Image (cartoon, rainbow over all chains, first blue to last red):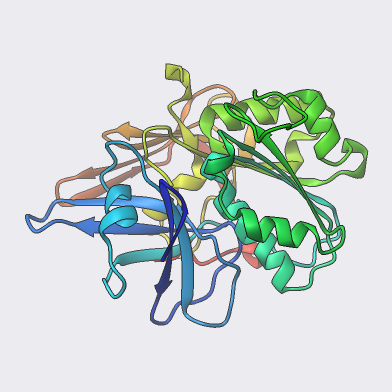
Length: 234
Length: 96
């Protein structure tokens, strides 16, 4: 277990007979209270597929959440969780596709996209990746050191941060929402026909997808994963 | 966040559907029985705060799928779709 930010924690889960997963899939975690009340939440897998029975999830603590406060504050190493998965067959990426890839993350929407980046790296995949990561402030960035190290290893991953509330000192772009110009500068030209994956809160996904389509990207090549602001997912 | 943004993607139904189906259905292409639009089930709009869950056509809003826990029974209503088309070679296990 380690904390990514003051409100988000990565948990490594050892799962007996884990069948293996594909980057982008999620697991459902069920918590059951002593009185029998239970709650299920979906969490994207953050780790690359690997041969060991180990899966990592990163959980953002939601105010008034039923599951995320437990997973980020109370659960201890060695505790058992009830898990279902891996789940999902659409918002996934496998190594070996020729086309360039662009990933657009809003907040904790980075998690399944990080699994794709890690899968890309661990497979030695040749596809060129670009990531646009929209995040509230510098302190809310997940996986910063790893993304920094990976983006320095040649040009197979280019990362652009967009800060919506607060930027680092001397940041060239003022804090604010992503816009068409930023997308045009940080993603692939639509003429290259990249495959796109967009993940974040529903309003972010709608907004980012509309901007991409306005920039000429084909809706058919954009896969999305939305999660609710009230904690149904992630 | 406005009220019209309270939906997720069909992706999010995969876990509940895995209680019933052995393969993941969210990557299947479905046709809306109301407007005729075709799309991956994963791209439908999914409403979770109903009794159970409702997937609606992203274009016309027609209810494509309803899945409700009713006591001992699990009720699945698929009449909002004319069909679901699956590509066997692309199927993922549902994760159940």
